Length: 146
Image (tube, rainbow, N blue to C red; front, top):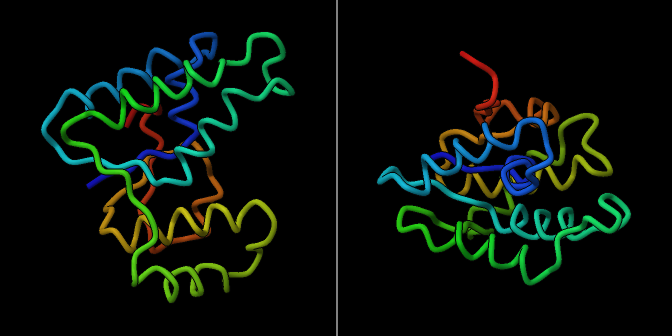
């Protein structure tokens, strides 16, 4: 099962982003398909936080009801799972957080990586290179041609 990081959700939602169409197509291919895929709960929250943030988007920030509808649309896809911490999460998270240079915002990334591993995610689709700090989790930028 693959999982989507919040940055791809944001790009797929914000149509003014240069990679909007490509991100939307990638998510759409999973949402419309039968292959299982996942969104970690922290990524759902981060998506809502980013797209509704007036400090980022000014007057063009997405109103919360619209952002929520988008999240519900993805969450209603038959093949999606919203994933969270499991009983196996804490020791995995501890291992991730013990890596050198895992401080500040990278702690959030360690949490997402640990949630993915604890839920059996085989690959996290992301544009965030910071996930390279967690070699236990395979990552890929789906917007770069193979």
